[in-house]
Every structure is written in C-alpha cells, then in structure tokens.
Image (cartoon, rainbow, N blue to C red; front, side):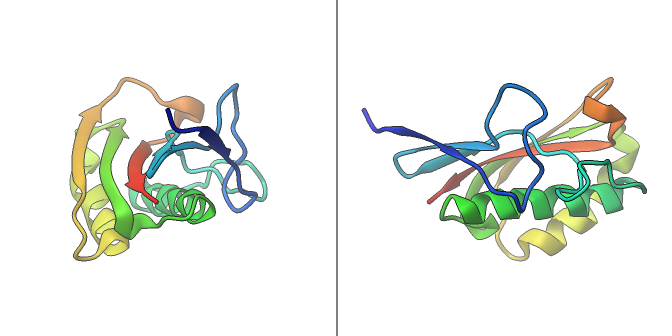
Length: 127
C-alpha cells in the first residue's frame, strides 16, 4: 500500500480542527474542504459568494501546488453552497479558475458551513 503523506502550506489557511489541509497517497491528492479564510489573518474574507469562491479556489490552488499538483490536474470537486441561489455566481468564478479544464463536480446546498461562510469546496487531484 502506498504511504500517506500529510500536505501543509502556509500559503493556505491552517486547519481549524484535527485534520490536514490535504492527504497525498500514491498519485492522488485529497484536499480538505476549503472555506474563504485569508491564510494570513485566518479571518473569513467578507463579501458575496463570488468573492468567497475566489478565495476558496486560491486556497485550494496553494494546497495543490504544495502537493505537486494544480487546479488543472483536479479530477473531482465537491461544492457545498449555503444557497443554490448563488449557483450562477459560483459558476462564473469557478469557470475563471479552471478555464477549459472541467473536472467532475457535485454541488449540494447545505444548511450551514463552518464560520457561516457561503461556500466550501474540496478536491481530488492527480500529482
């Protein structure tokens, strides 16, 4: 069985609980769900879902880069939205970050997210 490696980078928010920013096993990277925390202040970025989605994807990108990957090597994402009314705004920002690369994705509406943010995203990527 391949070794499990914990991924950590100061370029993304530190874990706010007993978990890793990501775990790498073999050629796969599994990220923890990322919310709109500024890595320097560990405070939620104020603003609408577009602003928060941008911060989330920048956090995911930093974690993936630390693990030897990138957004362009993401296979699957799961998006948790506080309101499906924000779906179009999320899609616009998400599309800018991923460009022509279109990983598989699931999107679900949830009652509440950590720190009362509007969006959380996790990813599975190849190294």
